[in-house]
Image (tube, rainbow, N blue to C red; front, side, top):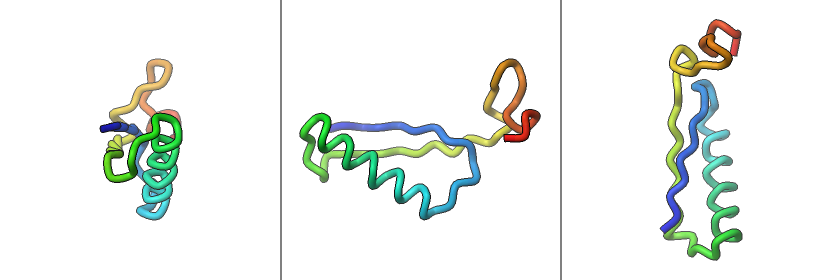
Amino acid sequence: MPFVQIYLLEGRTEEQKRKVIEKVTAAMMEAVDAPIENVRVWIHDMPNTNWGIAGKTAKDLGR
């Protein structure tokens, strides 16, 4: 059973997340020949204060 974890900064719409789940599921079905009912996708919404880039938070960098 493929289990995919995706980390994104908060702020994506529900529709954007649906599209990510749909496209990642399709990619896993194609890449590893997994049946659709076996593919799991977990999106972690990360606050921009909890994400560091080059020693600064994403919030401090305006992301």
